[in-house]
Length: 358
Image 1 (cartoon, rainbow, N blue to C red):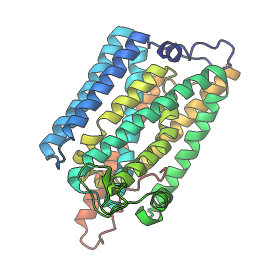
Image 2 (image 1 turned 135 degrees about the horizontal axis):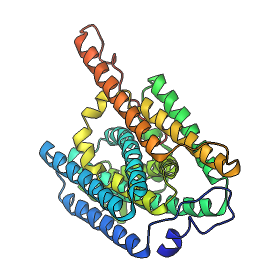
Image 3 (image 1 turned 180 degrees about the vertical axis):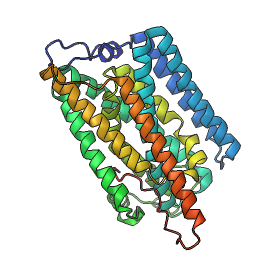
């Protein structure tokens, strides 16, 4: 299976779009998946005893989960060359940016379900695990589509452009993004067919009910976990095409997605307060998704009409870094201006507008 996946991209010689030969040998795939699984198990052991992480703990683990992919990228660069190294780092930056945006939605969901702070690590870990599995499925499907259909890059580009428009509209609307748990379809459906308790029971997803009928009931933790997994599906729809806009190598697509997701648990507690200050992040992500969408469309067009120019990966890296730098600076400047003006109301600065992809 791994050898088929690593060979999926270059397998087709008849497609109109030039494919990228994968560096992912079966050995490299196995080693990477084993490493990701080991890191996930470590995270699971950390959250086995529920607790509210200190700032020091969140900083330490966040630094670790940034250092690991950066070091891995350095090894890829030295082993396979600068082209693969640039593609990896660019893809990782895109996926990390999108994962930070995902945290906005996670924050809203965890607040809406009133998840105790000591249990939030476990919920986030469930979300990361589900996302890893779903991204793996989408990456495999994407690799097969690229190998089989010349219009796949055009389709991916259209998905990203449509997402960019929606993200941009949400960012400009400054609409409230509160979630009414009782109105969520998934919650209503689950409560209709399965009993749900009113109180949390530690990290347990189900508990045994009292009474003569016995049986088990779901806890609210199970409901929020299902809601998080539902958002994972939506996030995968644009996250995977976005990194395929940087590289056609299915292995690099998987590696960038996996490393960007693994640090979400710690990053949540590190950025929970700081995220509110990044009021322009959604604007920047809209521009990044639109840029990559255009890049994908041009890549497809170049395969059909060789005279159509393509956007080099190094230029893409510069554009993405530039956009993120600008929105960070303008967000911080907006925050300082809002704090300096005592006449501003509590909503004057505007809450960060998470994309409503979920």
